[in-house]
Length: 279
Image (cartoon, rainbow, N blue to C red):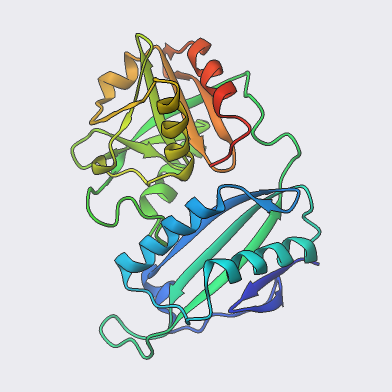
């Protein structure tokens, strides 16, 4: 049996914890953070908690004063041990507002939920077969103060993932309301053209990925700073190479979109620079 932590207490995985009046359930009123651990150590945890705390400020979500990043990190570590996830594991930390209607929150109280899952030992290894992507156009991402957050109103990504599964793609590229590149269902996207690296600017609506930031920092240190700018679908199709980044898989090479095929020479070099640092 595996367990999760809800507001500091352990519960068996089948336990019910939400009321029917939960704003998190009714309105997606909350945030989440996905992290990875290796041998019990959280990777890039300072960056993850910095992003989470910034999101709490944007949404005006208030945790009890004693719930700090240090406390949450300790509880995550203890839960990993309790669930026997000693090697590679994925952690999801969700924070959501308490009960109430749209205008009548009953208490200025937020809840937190910690879950862990074991991962294969080779997670993050170079994907020599490459990913097949498609472009999802039915739902567009907005470009506003919520766009860079990992908030619980995840419908654009959920719908894109559902579409990708039907089309047998490995992932789907989401566009913003200007029909330019945003990100994919679970990753940030990078293009390489004539050895210059590009990624959509944060003003274009992608989630502000921790691994995205880490890749930019690593590449900047070796004088290969990616250019952050608006990117079109034509930019994507005409790129020489494409790769994705996130906290769990690190860097994954994209081998094709439709009839377009991509090389991976530069991507492999970038992978070697960044690995084994994780998003």
